[in-house]
Every structure is written in structure tokens, then in C-alpha cells.
Length: 110
Image (cartoon, rainbow, N blue to C red; front, side, top):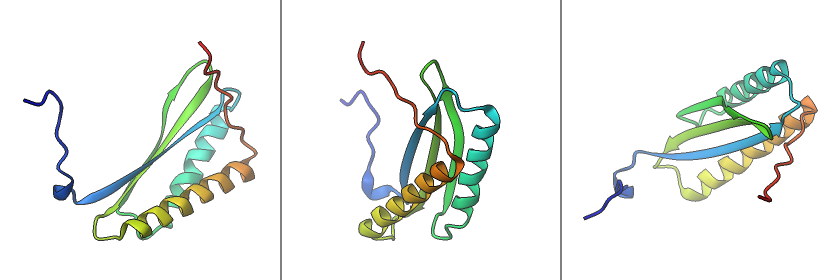
């Protein structure tokens, strides 16, 4: 028997993409809210996206983590899905640049 959930890919109706962004801990709440709003506006302009979610996923001593996830129908070819994810990622990077936000430098040494 299997102790975990089995995901039958052939039964999926949507593809999901996730982008997690670790923003510098010095980012203010106002900047975070403006950034989230900008991401939502950008996602609303993507008519091919079925649904999306943007939120402050967590915060800690090293970073504020913003999560962006979106769904598209499985009828979209995989290459088109990958191209869309790349397009959205580039738009996200442009918003970060325009907002003059900084990525967190997370210490991976323990």
C-alpha cells in the first residue's frame, strides 16, 4: 500500500505554476503591499490564466516570502505553458526592478 497521496496526472484539469520570491527583510509593509498589488494587476492582464493567487506566504528573520501561483487549462501545450511561466517571471523581475526592491540574501550555512 501507498502511505502518500497518489496524483493521477491524467485526471488533472489544470496545470499549476508557483513562483516564490524572497524579499529583503528590510522591505517595508507598504512596499510589500504595493508589490503584491502590482503582481495582481499584472496577473489580471494575463487572459490565458484561469486563476491565480498572490500573497505574503511567510516572514522571518531572513526574508519576507511572497508566493505567486497560477493555473491554466491542460489543453494548453506544455511548451506554451513553459513560455507563459517565463513571460510572467520576467514581468515579475521587471516589477521588482521598477519598485527598487531587493531580494533577500538567505544564509544557507547551518
